[in-house]
Image 1: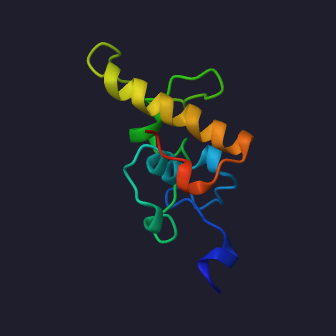
Image 2: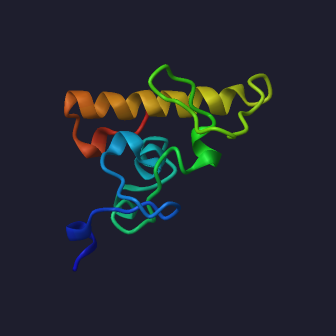
Image 3: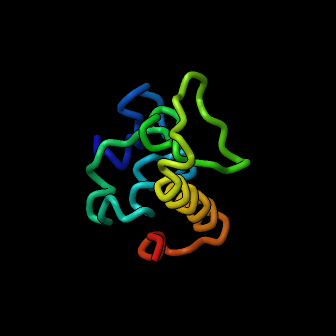
Length: 106
């Protein structure tokens, strides 16, 4: 069965990643860390399973997993701001139906 027929399972917990708002892969795409052609073959993770990325999100709609060490806001403010902006963009593209080629932050 083709991967697209199976859906995308989290490489950490094995459960399906049901939408892009919970996708670490799509957040990395929005941030410019993954190219469009890589989305279809790169491993997927839930944001809550990808602690290294999700710990930088500061948004009222995102709850961190218990035990996740959050970075020092002063030392890593630029990364926190960028990843949070990426998460906000991810929510925006879903709610507004923006084409996938326009997802990345400018």
